[in-house]
Image (cartoon, rainbow, N blue to C red; front, side):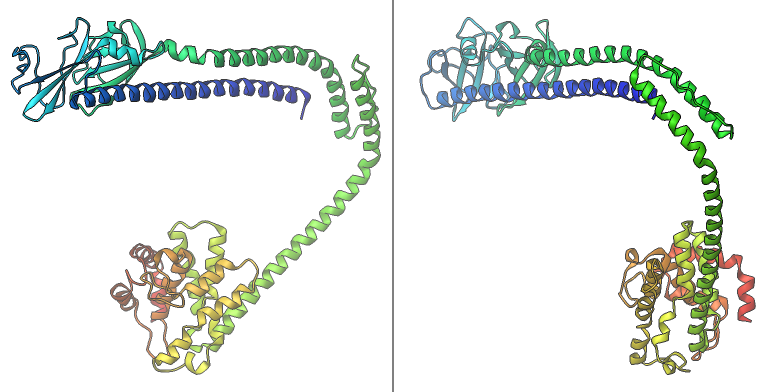
Length: 509
């Protein structure tokens, strides 16, 4: 890495540090704000609810409470004690009910008036502003009691009483103060408890954090300024040396004889570095001819290895083809079957969009050797002129297992082994040897399976003559599509077959 690049890397590190501190500041601020909001919302709303329920509960029990008015009213809102009709100043729809009027009825100040169900009568409870303030006063948050239409009935700041809010949580402006407003429902149908947290409350909590973060940011920026100044001086001192060294090395690459003369600077470390470079260049000239000789020898070795690789690959292919032919020699009824399966399976794989060389190679050799396990099946079963008995078929069903055992011995052929073992599996789970279903059978194995079935139907067998193509397809559509093969796979197979129909017509004639 060049010195300038390293310096730029350090500069990027400084910028990244500034960015990280900014992110930490922002994330920390959000966490602080959320915690402040959560604390005030939960703490003050819980206290407000507790005061209301305790006061109303004591009123229902008939307990006398200081600064709380309790009256028994008829359902028509007539005070049973004084006989005064309060229907002109009170109204309700459901019980319990918060009267939507903050003016005091029995108190001169703002009050909250509740109507509670008291059997055949109503219980009227009036809470003054003084009771609300005595328990909930806070300089950093205001507690509110709000009606269903958003009117503030009581607040820890009396000047907010009567203000109409939007009655939903979010930022709002109340009494020329901007802050966050949060509401929660009460067990009174037309009443909600609220808390209003002014913006300055958040700032007051965040001030120490802002102070520390700002100090850290200023420190990093100051470090960046000093670093950039140092960078300018350092790069200027190094550039001359770099240009001289670059010129000398360029001449060396052009096979020119160069004697590097160090340029003295005021930086001792750079002078020492130039001396070392001069020695290295002398050593380079001495070893360059030796390196050329080694490269020529290495190229000859590479050519020999490539030739050996080509020969080994050809031999491997011959061995595999011979193995496939050995299978067909034992099973006389399937001569040429594997080769036809290979060709058609590769075309079907490409039709389905398979392009991975590993998949195509696995399909090629899997199709070629899918019946290799028949080596372990007795010849009297393989070449039996009639249909197999149940016991014979159970023996025949072992050939995919035998085949997999053989293929597993070849390193790197796991995909081929999968095709060999599962080319007789059906998507409905009725196949063998493992009874796999659609999602468990690889597409590679399904491709070889459908091609194997088709070519087997149009080939002559000891127990039946070869079928025409239309007969084979009719059997596959009627008995196998949807149970042995997926319909989409079958439709793709038909497209491939239509392109090569003349080839298979010739085979079946």
